[in-house]
Image 1 (cartoon, helix red, strand yellow):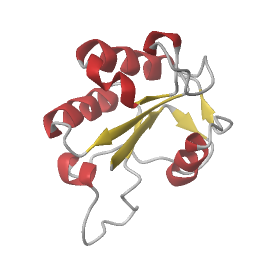
Image 2 (cartoon, one colour; image 1 turned 120 degrees about the vertical axis):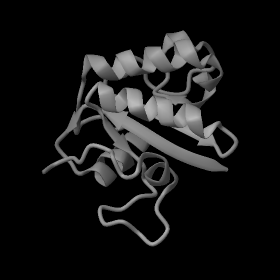
Image 3 (cartoon, rainbow, N blue to C red; image 1 turned 135 degrees about the vertical axis):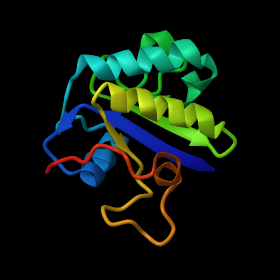
Image 4 (cartoon, rainbow, N blue to C red; image 1 turned 90 degrees about the vertical axis):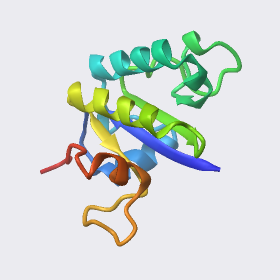
Length: 132
């Protein structure tokens, strides 16, 4: 068991809908962005052990094939276990924010919940808001 964090550039849908679609492999609402691929490359270079947590699949991850190829610039989804160092997650989210990407913590809601999601506690709700 763990948690998921997702990153993308632009989407025509709100963050929760975008995330749900991406989980189903539907990239129709997101626009490819070179900084998504850049973030992915940065993550895999700095923390290669996270390769098995990364979606979408691409040849740089090796076997087995876990999804369609060629979507690396559409989104980055990390399926993380709770034992991943919080500093690592914070650094990844900070880099994504630097690049101007959406950082989506699906455990969060627009209004601060009583028990904020894991990333909200880490980042102080500093993620980029989507869709105005």
